Image 1 (cartoon, one colour):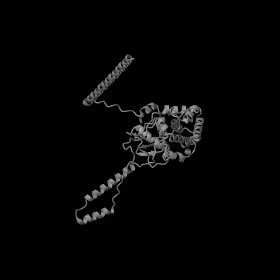
Image 2: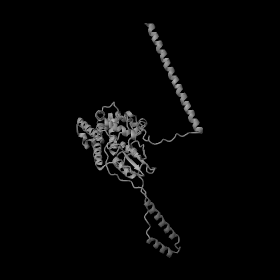
Image 3: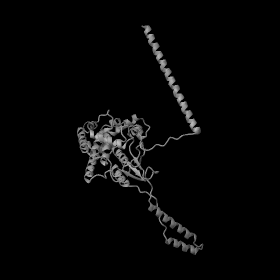
Image 4: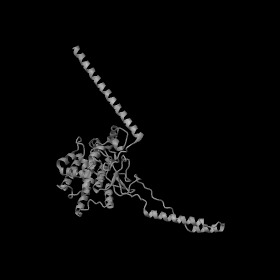
Length: 392
């Protein structure tokens, strides 16, 4: 997992201008056909008509641009979000993916998570990315900026210029420093990453291999020096320091956030802004992790920054009322209404009912057999004990 990069090339889509151009082409082609049909059959006149046809050059055929998105049957103005799979502790172990989904929910925009089993990446090679009306937009910051403009949903609209500057600087600290401390801990403790968030790799990857094998390969590769994540952590600068120094860096960042928040419900008052979204997406990675795992920065937040715990809880309750359902069922689209189950009629319904009854009867028989075995075993034990007592 690595920090995102900027600038994405948008995919061109068909426009009304292209449609008008194509209509003009069809009109010109029809006129040429009419002229050919009315031409005389004589050789000399044919030659004259041919020359006249050459003088008017045939228009170039307009080629419609091809859509290069994964969701070809998209619905207009619906945002299709590509991110990591769910975990039993939080909706996403990627701060950037959780950031985008939290913002979408706060903004009240219609979106749908695409269950791609982590097979797809943006043209920049990253997650998350979205597809909107046949266009791909990558990088969480750019996604939020583009959607804010298109749908007129600016969470920072009520901020003064000074507050915007503070928000920008604080977000830079969180995403360019604090989050790398989190990534460092993960690359050094891949086994704790899996255990702490109870990551189900088989579910996340849509793979048939047992989790024991997948976990082994994950632990073997994720923490190696040649692994891309390790290289990026070192290249960023955090990875060259001692573990105790990195921990102190993290504690200092958390103390700064705690001081800025103070006793306010959100960083700039009663309503959440983009800073609250970014802070929640990163701090939840520290707080929603199994207590069975040793994670010093989680313990530091709990003991010294209780207001940050409260802030995370407020955003969670406001944006994710379905949190428990998401984490228990690992449902990417718990926020969307589910279609009613089909009511089957006729022979198909009778067949299913009969099969269900047979299964129930089979289960009943197996339970009775198991019960008989247990009783028989108990009788044998009783008789064996009696024989031992008599022998004494």
